[in-house]
Length: 494
Image 1 (cartoon, rainbow, N blue to C red):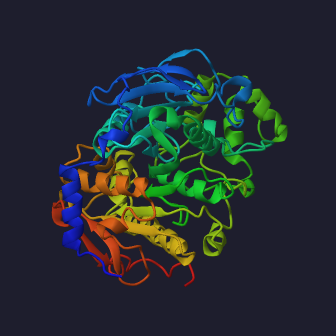
Image 2 (image 1 turned 90 degrees about the horizontal axis):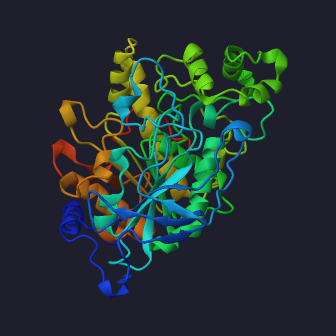
């Protein structure tokens, strides 16, 4: 098959940043009013014009799950249904966070208003123009499963909605001990992952009312958000709902990823019993009764308890993380990857050139510098796992694309998270390359990137897309061999 040159790929990407989303306007919902009321399963939601792009309607803080406080703490989420009016002009509360003592939460732009009644979703759309049924891009935030908030300004979806003619959506999910308690007697340990599934179901049921196409939902995320996307691909094989997956700097085949070592019953619920003891609920000798006791404590008491014994830096050494329960997180994920036991949908996956720099900077602040060997291992965990996930999809005849963001920022290379402001950014230069590619994939996960001359990833050949080498807004197709030279042998058999 004839493939376009790297120069041609750049040409197409740049044209798309100059003339974004060229479509026949007659198909748009021309009678749409900015911020008009929208009837959803949660109620009738009124929005307003986006501050950044007044032609984009913004709907914020829509509840998709009921409060998770009290008796519902550490249980799977319950769908929120309503018929009343919802003022969708401000973000909902963030879910409780767990950062540790070394870095203030304000550094990350997290909403200081935090509550266990936090399962809300936000929508950016412009149905009055472009396609009548738009592709949907559903974002999952990262933060080592300890911090994260859909109201962070970096995740505002107005640019994508305005310039790429998609419906952009994000949402909150439970974190740390609230989302991943690792406690005795619970039927579900990873309720934070179940929050994510509930959000996907809400989008399926409601996005058409916002001008979106429920058959074209792409789930995408970064860091722990990318882990979540990858977890999702192994959990919901029978009813995926989503039509495409994008994982930025995170995957379940990398060994530990960003400092997250998964837990299981062999760990003996140690972290949980530390928490329950501090709460005055007793330790191991009280077993599952500690959970009932802890449900009667305030969220603030739990928050204070985690700080009393948890890591001083929960981003590097998180205490409460996804739990290998073989329901939502699997111990045999490598075998599942080799056997094709995942969602049979296209994948776009990649990493940044020097992921470990961010973690090194955080470790320096915490007074525990990382060794060069640890930094190399971190880079390999991200990069090699991305390689293997792409190979696993290709082995099953599925479409997969792989990228490496190689901008030489500060002479050390793009680090963890550097691509996020470009994906949600101003749609020029490097940002335009990311946005155009991501949106092309979302609109047509099978052929969208092929139409730009970006071939599917293969074990051999020049199929790795290098984005931004030498700090220039260019792309190049290269062999991954030189960039994977420190990777061990792939866990995916040929």
